[in-house]
Length: 252
Image (cartoon, rainbow, N blue to C red; front, top):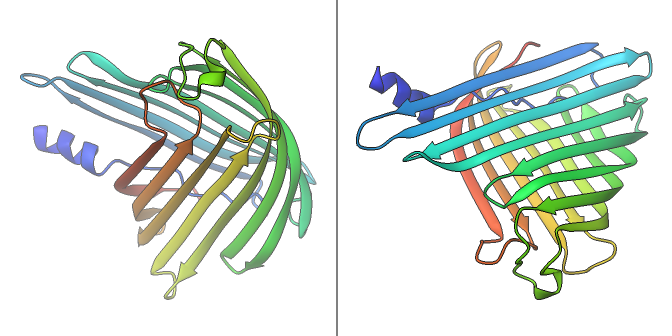
């Protein structure tokens, strides 16, 4: 039993295959629930859940939502409890250039973020789309409001602020490529997100995945995630890096 639990921790099932909103299928869905529990000298609890859904409510519209929940506890002390909801509404995504609206809601226990809201819109451009390979570039503008649990920051001018609000501009780059006759799949999702009001308020994120198909609906996956945030609570590091191994399951 312990060996099975360790395998679940080291090789979690990751159902987060990148969904292309320009595909013609009316409904796409992924769902993941993984966990790990260890008791005794060291007590560990890890729970992760993630869903990714894309639907066509009307002929020219596509709604895509990605929701995740993470909880981690080590030695009966909570290390993470995060919620992330990414929501997009696209109009005519089968075209080369099309508009989009977005709304994000997130929390982050480790970074002392009680809740963060972000709403906006912009345009997306298909750089190329051929067979299963595609590359997209998007430019959006957003209003963001972040409420923190503590008010002592690494940049002194923000000290004492319960919330930090700003207008942002975001440059997104997403792609997916099938190489060597579909024996290797490369995915990447990245963005740069500066504030339009304060030059010292910015963040970026890079998410790179390599997938090896095992079965029609199952791929082995290596994933690297890098995140950077310029404004953090005093004493925290600005960057985080994650390297994970797992599997991708998909319904299409």
